[in-house]
Structure formats: C-alpha cells, structure tokens
Image (cartoon, rainbow, N blue to C red):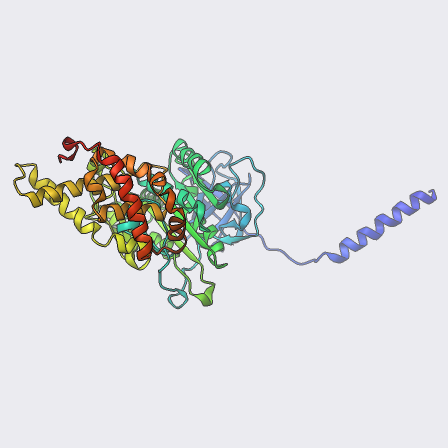
Length: 514
C-alpha cells in the first residue's frame, strides 16, 4: 500500500468515526398497517391500533391522507391526493403527526395547494416552519374590540355595511351574481394598505380561479397575497382541509401584529365535500341528510378570525366567507348556520343583478353587526341618512308602478332615489378610494346630483378626479385621516358644484322615470 493510499484510508476512517460518534442509537417505533379497501377518496386501513383521529398517514407510494373515523378493527383515511398509485394490500405508515402546512413570508405572492405545495413555476416554498391546520381560536381575554375598517372600495358596502378588521362578514347569494366579484374588489382595494390577503378556492372551476389570480396580478398587489387552490378536480380531502390551511397561513401574520384577510370561496361547496366524506366514512347524517357536526366544522373555522389586543400583539384576521343560495332561499340549512356564526352578511339579489344594478346588494336583508364602529368618520357623517333614503325610494318605486305620481314630494323622492341607485352602481375591478366615496356622498347629500340626468351619473363619477383636481391635497388628507373638516367640506362642495354645472345641461327627463 502506498503512502497516498494510507492517507486516504486514514482520512476515511476518521470521518466515519466522527459520523458514528455524532449519531444516536435508540429504538424507533413505526406503526404500520394495510389498505383493506380503497374507493371514492377513502381508504379503509387495518393494523393501526394506536392511530388517532386526524393523524397523518403515509402510503407506500408517497401519498398522504388523514384519519377521519375510527372503528374497532379499522380506520377510515381520507386521501389528500388522487387514488392513482394506492391499491388494496399496500403498506401504510403512521406518522404520529397531524396535517401541517408551511407558513411564513415565503408564501407571499405564491399559488399553492392546501398542503403548501407550489402550483406556480416559482420554485420551492421558503417556509419558516410547519404549523397544524387545526388550531384553537384566540381566547376571549386575548381579543380586542373591532374598530379599524377594512375598506372594500365598494361604496354600497363601505357606506352602509362597513367591515372591520377581525370581523367575519358572510357574502351570500345565488349562483353567478357577483359574490366572488365583491371579495375580489376587496382584495384589489388593499393594494394601498398593509393588509395581507389569502384567497382560498374550494371546489371552484380552474378557469374561475385563474380569472381571480389574473385580476389581482393586473389590478392589485399580488406580492402581498397568497392563493390557496383546491379546484373541483382535486381530491375531496384537499378541498376539505383548504380553508383550515388558509387560516393557518394567515394566522402566522396575525400573531406577529400584522393584519390579514381570508376570502373563502366558498363554504357551500366545502359543506357538500364534508357531507360526502362524512357519509362515506359512515358518520350519522343529521337534518336534511347533512352530518350534524357541519355547524361545528364551520364554527371552529370562522372563530379563528379575531382582532387581538395589544398584549397579544394587536394583529387581526378578517374572514370573508362566501356561500351560495338556491333560488334566493336565505333560510336554507347551510347558509342559516353560517349566518348565525358570522357578524353580518352581504346578501346579493338575483333580480337586482339581472336588472343591471351591480353590485346587487340587497340593503333590506344585508347587515353588519359591527358597522359604524369601524366606519371612517368622513363616511359616517356623509352617509348617515343614505340607507333610510334609499329604502324609502325602493318602497315608493314599487307603489308607483301601479299608478301615476301626482304628489310632488313623491316625485322628488323617486328622482333622488334613482340618483342614489345610480351613484351606488359600480363597475367590477374599480374600487373607489375613501375620498372619492366621500365626494360622491357629499354630492348626493347637497343635492348636486339632482340637476344631473341619471344616465350622466356614471360620467360624473368617472370625472371626479378632473372636477376635484384643485382639491387633491384635501382628497389625500381624507384618504390618510378618514376625516373631513368643515373647511374641506366647503372646498369639495364648491368643486363638485362646478362639476355638476358642467353636466347639468345634459339632463334627460325621460331618464328619471322609474
């Protein structure tokens, strides 16, 4: 043996001894079982006598699932991937852990599945750690009052049904009448705030999810958003854990004193998935064939949204769950439970939508149980009579359809109501800053819009920056402070009157007919 060979051998032996000395020799227990049957995303497994509910299970081909039901001799496992590669007779291993997802700033701007696996082409996720998807809601003593606004940029909501940081506001309505559009505008409107947005798609079409992501990238701040996607084609297990995973990702920021918003689109499909899984795993059905614990599932999910007090960091997590109605039936089983869990609801009406009144918010059944406590002072002062005036108009409009309007006062109410409706109408992907909403409400309050044709209200809104160009400092101050002083009010009104005079000559009396 040459000297070089002896040196190489000596180095190898030295490194080997170091590795062996650093290692720990101890018995390791690994519980294994066997797949007895597999179908419909559910695997029946035997041999896991020490298995626990919600425990993560690893299959021989690398797939994962979680235990959903325990029987005397078997357990039912919900797969978190498709059935391909899993067969009866396969070996499974208990992990001893629950389902966990990556959390941290590395998720911002990314598209992931509910397990945190990347669905975009931006490389692996730089996670800070893995947190369980099921976490306890903050204790009552750790919560603070909900008093800071979440501006949606949608005037009918911000002016009449204000949403606060830490609130749970349900968006509910029939299929395809703008529920997701409201949540999307709210996400886009956070481009000028520090709010971190998490959008979770449960059982949605891939094209619909792509539309949301593209809209945020084009109009919002995608670098402060996380997109959690469990489309209709994904495994039921992934769809079931999706909203819980999104909550965990958002809680990371809340617990660090930051502010987060979670949009769950939607919980009706999540409830259907829950029913599917529950019946396949032989859980007893309850009223209307829904498992009796579906209320508890959504309650423990939405209770995690909260505003923390200063001792707990002062962060907040706001939830905007979406639910779908069937034929406008607001008393349907699943939505009724969600209404009792949340702090209010934005109800969309299909008749308003098809009549072209978008967003089609029904002001009679919508409510925010926090409301004015979170509303900007400038909005509260200028919109204090808006809801009452609009509600009176809607009633008068119904009665006047059956006959003429001989009363001058009624005619004035109708004309004003038509302008309120036109001012509240808003294009999608065009959220209004606070100052523009205040300016429009001032124009309504002062009667400036009364001399403008209803058909010209949209033009008036689009030309607000032009009309208020001399008052940009005032507008910036309103956006920053949320307050409009008496002097600023007079300055804005003077500019608005000049703008109103420009459009007043184009009045069309026929446009004022209900």
